[in-house]
Amino acid sequence: MRIPVPRPRSLAAQLFAMQAVLIAVVVAGYALFTYVSDRSQAEEAAARQARAVARSVADSPSVREAIHTSDPTAELQPYALRVMRDTEVDFVTIMNPQGIRWTHPDEKQIGQRFRGHIEAAQRGGTFTETYTGTLGPSVRAVTPVEEGGKVVGLVSAGIKVEAISKRVQGQLTALLGVAAGALALGAVGTYVINARLRRHTHGMNAAELSRMHDYHQAALHAVREGLLMLDGQYRVALINDGGRELLGVTGEVVGRSVADLGLPAPLTGALLASEPRVDEVHLTADRVLVVNTSPVSGGERRGTVVTLRDVTELQSLMGELDSERGFTQALRSQAHEAANRLHTVVSLIELGRAQEAVEFATAELELAQALTDQVVAAVSEPVLAALLLGKTAQANERGVELVVSEDSRLDDGLLPPSLPARDLVTILGNLIDNAVDAAQGSGRAKVTVTAYTEGAELVLRVCDTGPGVHPGHADLVFQRGFSTKPAGPGGRGLGLALVRQAVHRHDGTLTVAEADGGGAEFEARLPLEDAGGGTASAKALSRGAVSGGDR
Image 1: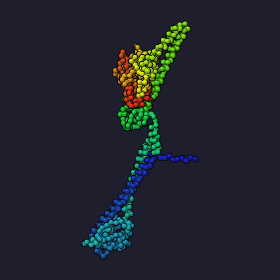
Image 2 (image 1 turned 135 degrees about the vertical axis):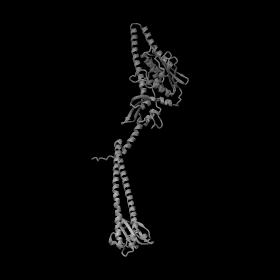
Image 3 (image 1 turned 180 degrees about the horizontal axis):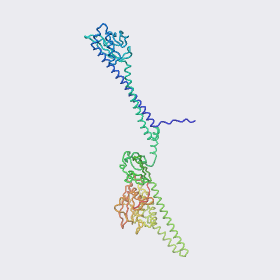
């Protein structure tokens, strides 16, 4: 049989017990202090009262006269009893200088020696003490009866300790009532506070909260995706390592406003938006991010949870996939055309026109070879040459003529390691796609590509015969999401933004102007020297071609 192990108390229950004990100890301590203080004050008040009564009796002329009579007790005993009754003291004892009583509440004690100290009074002084006499413990005062500078008698007045205790007990009852009320009020307040704490901690104990915090910290550092939490004033409340890396922020950012992080304006706007954002694509200086935001609300706005996902490599693969699809379509079309041409050659041979068949086939081969020779002669860098050949076939399928200008000259091995071919494919591929989109449907659909080096710079220029770019859109055209065409299934306005990202990553420049004869002319200039000491190369190695930009 399994013995159930009791679950540790929740943090709220532990705090409630601790606070209840603390309040009980404080109230009990205060009650004890007050009781001792009140008792001390009661004893002091009793001593003052006894002293005042004793001095009054000692100063009474009738007492002095009675002392000189033959039987002082006869006159002093009724007087003492009357003083006791009027002043609410427990005894008034009048005695001779040797301490033999003349009066006493118990008549049997008259004529007996006074129990207590009288030496100071015999010397003419007045004093108080707590002493146990015939009536029990009492607070008493002893004072001399003087006449002509001589002590002719002694007077003692006192209040029993029992009477003093009864006085304090009445105050103690009220004090205990107040203490009980304070304890009850404190307990209710503590219960209300801890009930609220229990709701916030979900009834977990301290060990569970500590373990959850450890898991929380481990999860934040283990997750590769970026996580950013903003408070109600859009200040950073939490950011994990992935978020720092993806946003490119360093130093202490917790507590800073999102607007002060130096992020691109579109990304900052998305983080500051009050409505949720779902799978929005944003560009930073080095990355393509998918951003999701979800406001945290509980009757009022408490903040925003932001997740960041790096899709730079995914966008690169999608761009390459788009290129491969284009190449596949071009090859399928060319295969269809080749089959038609082959049927033509076979038919010419069957008709006995062998010479015409040879001439027809040779002309087609020479045309394809001439195009390849033209591209390779101008751009011998293999990756860019392959890109231009593939884009030429794609453009032809869309009814656009793509030519490499005679000014192009880019030899193999010229590009430095800091300028990888994949980044050039991103730049040139997106510029060509954008130009083909713009030129398609124009009167003479043509795109001209020029690639050459000038000094320490690589120049990539793409011109089209489209409608051109309005001067007012010269800067907007490079922003993510900007397009003059309807959005397609995959969205538009990303290609040119990626071009600008890649160009800026290599400290280059990107401009747009009106081309000769109309249309638009995009020009990218990239330094051939590694000015960043290898930093640009390290950043660029993981970037690839992404298509889809258009105007």
